[in-house]
Amino acid sequence: MPDQRDARSPATRDDMSNYNRLRYASRLFDQWPEKYDRWFETPIGALVKKYENELLLDLLQPRPGESILDVGCGTGVFTLDILASGSRVAGLDVSITMLKRAGHKTEGYPFRGVAGDMSFLPFVDECFDKVVSMTALEFVADGRGAVADLFRVTRKGGVVVVTTLNSLSPWAARRKKAAAKGHSLFERMIFRSPDELRALAPVEGLVKTAIHFQKDDDPAKAAGIEHDGQRRDLDTGAFLAARWEKPVTQIED
Image (cartoon, rainbow, N blue to C red; front, side):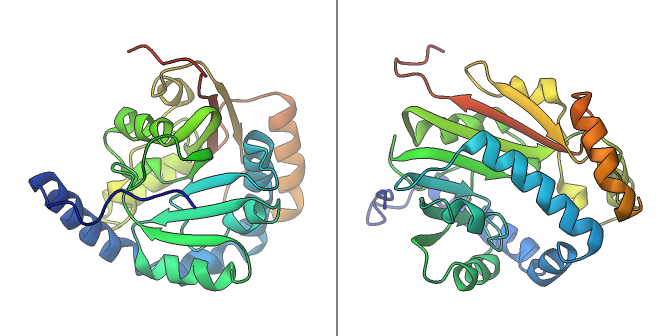
């Protein structure tokens, strides 16, 4: 697995700030693992997982032997399918509780959990073949800086995939309403549009969406709604995903 930054280096003020932010974020997310996993077991949640996973794997194209960083891996719901390709995965998350759950799910696979913040990745430059971040960008104010760090740890010619909640979707509108009522998690979310996501990277990329049905839709009809949305290439799907390739030559600022 890729090397982490030297933990023996003297602590700086920025290091302490990152540590304190990590502790706060961990407490925020530690209460959600069971609820998160249970939701994907509901009829509509299972469909969400199916279509999000299909788009993720289509963009990431994980291959045997590749070293992949999964940023915001959570409980490992999507990590398992990446590992099934034969890739080696380092899963980073702010929540120790979620990482422990991911570790149990991925037992027997080449998976290593790392506690960390996607705004300050604890890895050396260009140490992963591919990097993916699944719905973690919503909790980062400096999206451009976070994406730049994803590129930093990706090898030249490698792939970066970032997914987030689409601000153009009704799902985002629901979460904004919940945030206004004081929902502890949703009130910290930042929603971005396809154009806003594109603008975070230093290179051109491919942007697609999935989940064109709604949370309250009849699961029996949701598949048809999803297929129609994908056929029409609508940009309003709740699951917003971007794929970029890191140039083999230096990226100019």
